[in-house]
Length: 118
Image (cartoon, rainbow, N blue to C red):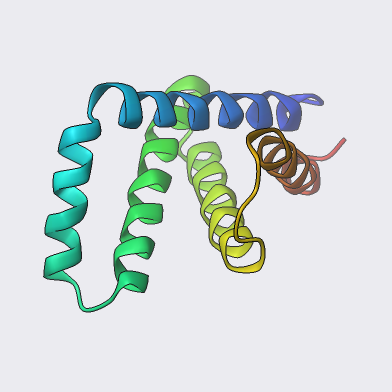
């Protein structure tokens, strides 16, 4: 249990990369069309963006829940990832890949250290 925070942070980083690869390498056309449908169905770009982040959080919830056999860990991972994505997208507009991954890993690690202990 002592290193659970580390394993969850690593699994969440893997989950984020898997999500990116799936979306942009395999279902890109569907995702673009789906985004257009969402955009036309919703009232603002902000709502579309929040729906996108929520769907990504759902992906992380499913992935992490399956890896750790725990809905609690999956929910917490999806929640912190969602909050972190939303907050850094508002505060920091453009971020290169490596600093983005490092920011997520550090913040998610600190969150899970607080939750699960040292």
